[in-house]
Length: 385
Ligand code: PLP
Image: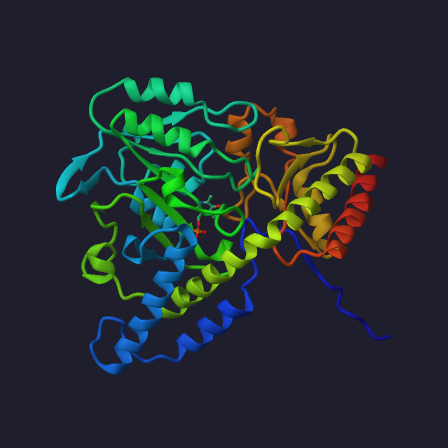
């Protein structure tokens, strides 16, 4: 008997979006370039040309001048770079005594960058996952010297959007600087570094349809220089040593151009997400949708249903051809309790059931139907137990 491979549907765009056709072409074309982008011969200049074109595209995505963009190996390296106790503003050294990060940041921010552990403070969030701005203000006032603050634009697990511009005003009034991890916002909401009020912003290519392994540190403040994380070469205007990766960067640039166009599809994505959640509530009336009361990314739904373990449900959905993720942190193959849901005060039992469904610009209504029908089967199987 002939077997047909089951088609798969993908609802894990927040973990890594599928490579766009344009990004794939850009990567493949760049792979056959011979030159080192720092070489002055024609081959080197061709590689340099690709990188500078990509820089202009990434800059356009977030409304800055190309010179403000430094390419890195991804969002994690960009966050590690941005969280530096040593910076310069207009040639004057600035030394940050402390780093304050919100309690729901990505692990690459929670790790504290290059600050000693005892110099890192955690700013609490409320039950919806929104940062407590009064607590931020108090924590800024409590201590000597300038403070660096890191607040993400939107959360990768829940999609909850932070009041970044308000935080920026508070941080600047206290003489500090603000870093914003905007990895999940790019391509999903209009992104303007100036409107955020951010001094430094982090981006990652693979959340917007670019290849894994490319990212950027974007400086929002003219005259700002961050002590490089990688030293030993003058690449990237002396801000990041090491030969650039032209295929990954060219792919990032192509994805950034596509992400600007993708913004138009986000109204449909948001309607599909809302439809999914309405249907989910009918199938599983006891469901809790995290962050449902506040502004969220259009594409993200994180929820928990009593009696349904996330790990088991993710595996059962996977067997049904549907890729979703557990809302808990899972970067080592081992699912552990989500610090995001913990910070929101979600009881451990509910957090253990957290499932994240994240949509993308190419998500179709038929795929949502497939997800709902698979969920119905999986959740009924649990309910019978
Ligand atoms: N910041 C956020 C909010 C993320 O969601 C991620 C990836 O999951 C990162 C940073 C890290 O980016 P990368 O995977 O490119 O290192």
